[in-house]
Each structure stands twice: as structure tokens, then as C-alpha cells.
Image (tube, rainbow, N blue to C red; front, side, top):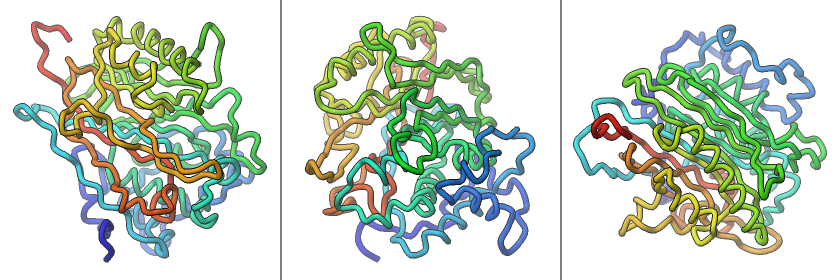
Length: 391
């Protein structure tokens, strides 16, 4: 087996801290009901062929899926591709163990299918590697590997026909907020607009409130959005806010992103009651750490820190990249994706290390090995003890 790869065994999925129950139902033998459900999501034009998928089904009417069987179905589809990359969690604990299981948060720009095939011009990526039938299974395999309690996604253009039906049957509750003018709609045979999606495990959290935020810049409504939800942990009864966003892309829009970030921070200030409620913000900010929008988040009165800085030797430096691609305009290696958290209320217990340059390979991302041009970020959080009842 080549260096940098590992076989992904079903045994490694097991029952994790996240509370995913892997014996939720008997799936029968042979090609199970699960395969039927998965197969319905394989066609990129599923939305037009199956209009019923455009309406979110009642979760109580859906049979639970055994994640091991879903993984097996994905692996069967991917049998001609190389195994998943091996990525390890880095232990960042500096104190005694928490009395409650950690909260695992996954941040990922999964690459909208319409953009990957129709607009992004990944010149080194074979067209076959972008086929939705297989790329979707790579995305699901990555999610199943890390078993997040909370999943924050950007560039989701297959929410209703793929992610919502499958993840709801894995025990997640989902929310989707599309861009008002998604560039996906300019692509022929698109699957609808892309947007942000937020999923959380219903057996771990109770939804307290939810806000869909259309970001403004200099009083103008923009094409970028955010979702912010206040959740209550069922084990500890502690509340926190989780937010997901995707800011404006491209060079030359730095001031615009800065204004969007300020608007988001103001919204989160109100939602968290002036930082009384702990906060986690995930997103593709389309901004390097040198940009103003990054500095706004780092210096905000919400007392936020960037989790992935903790992987650096000094604890003060962001990773060298979270996206690495080759387009017709040239090679782009940037740090654009972040998980921000309330540093006084929360601690990062571990973080998933990034892919190495050797693993990514000379043709960069996406590829047959990896489904997106952005790397997934995964962190385990725990609550700090409350000093004198304050956060």
C-alpha cells in the first residue's frame, strides 16, 4: 500500500463518542433498502426525476440507516478508487478530562457539483473524478469516518436529494440556506442553488433557536449567507451557538468580505446575548489570515480564537493551506477555512491534522482520492468549568 494511504476498515467506524448508533435497524441481506435509498441519490438529475425529494420528508417516516452499511455501499461504488487518506487527530488537551463527551464539529466546503463540473476549471483533475455518482460517496465516506456531532457545510447543491435524506436517517437534523443568486444556476443541468447546510445529532442536542442570516455589506444585502443555531447539550444542559457561513470569494473583494464579517459578528453578538452563550463559527471565509475580516474575528468582543492555530508549534499560526488547486489561472494554495470558538468558555481537546503535500499529490485537489478542493476541518470541543457561574 502506498505511503500516505490507509485501508478504511468497517471496524474502525464502531460506536464513537458522537452517539451514532450503528445497529439502528436490520438492513436485511443482499441489496438492502439502504442501497435503494442510496441509489436514488446517485443521479445528478435526481431533483428533476424525483420531485418528491425537493420537499424535506418527515424524519419520523424514514427508517434509520446503519452507518456501517451506508459506508459499505459507498465503498462498493468507490471500489476502483484508491483508499481514503489517513489523517490523525492531534491531542491538544491541557487539563483534566471533561465529565461529558466532547462535541465533535466538522467544517467543510464540499465543492458544489455544478461548479466543480461547470465553472471551476480544475485543469489537472480528470473529469471522471468529478462524477457525482462517485464523488458523493467520497464526501459521505469522509463524514462517516469522523462521525461529527455537528456538521457545517458550504457549497451544498445536493441538499434535498442526497444529504438531507441520508443524514436525517443517520440521526441528524438539518437546515439549508441557499444563496439568493447561486452561480450554480448558470450551469446547464444544475441541481439547484448551492448554499450553507448545518446538521446536528438529535440524540445529543436540542434546538433552542435558529436564524438564517443573509449577510449585508455597507447596508447592501449580498449573495452570501449564514446559519446560526443555539443548541442545548442533552448530557450537560449547557447551551452554545453554532454558526456556518461562506463569505464572498476572489481577490479584490477584501473590503466587501470585511463588511460581511462585521455584519455576521453583529448578528452573533445579538444571538449570544453579548457573548454570554458560547460560540463556534465554521466557515469558508475566502480570506487569508492577513485580511481585515480575519482580524475582525480575532479581535472581536466575542473573545474568539481560531482552533487550527493550536496545531502550530507556537499556537499562534494558521495552517499553511486549507485549499490547494490548479486552475487555468494557475496554482492556488491558500488558508481560507476556519473554526472559531469562544476561548474562555470552550477548550479544543483535539484537531484533525491536515493532508500533507505528499498525500495531496502534484495534481492537487480535487482528485480521485479526495472529493473537494477544500480540506475538511474537524475539532473536538469541551466546555470549560464556569467561573462563578459566568461564561
